[in-house]
Amino acid sequence: EFGAGLGPRILAMNMLGISADGIELSQWAVEHKLHDNIKQGNILTYRDGSTRRLVLAFDILEHLNYKDLDKALETIKIHTNKYVLISIPVIGNPDLLKDKTHKIHETMEWWVKKIEGIGFKILPTPQHFQYWQQLIIAEK
Image 1 (cartoon, rainbow, N blue to C red):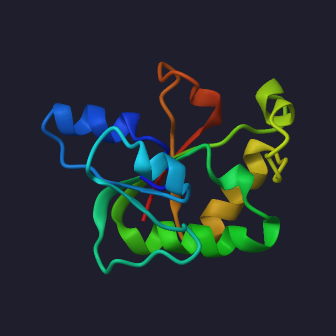
Image 2 (image 1 turned 135 degrees about the vertical axis):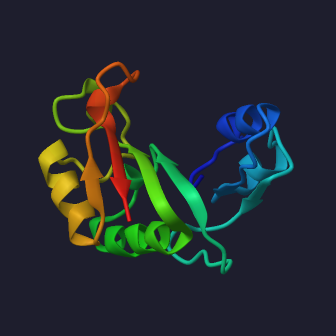
């Protein structure tokens, strides 16, 4: 997971027997991590030579500058060998403008086009998923 924060999803997956690891920019978050499988790294430059079947990027991409977005999406593409699950608040979601650290304000259609432009195939997001309106599931 890129943007793992303290790592609640990493902790939960490992507790369920799913091997998961996370990358987090914040040194503070890494120092207070909930699971050992979280290390410090930057989505713009992180390369560890490995791939995973699923890469998560929850509430991270909207915090980047527009000029850095393609680089971040390329990092995600390099590190998955199958799927990505991305959560992004989009125009129409009141949380997008409430957080002043959100730098990218776009529609879901814009995000889909951007992610497809990197070479991903967008898959349907099941509407029974919580927050399905801001989730993008894609396949490499």
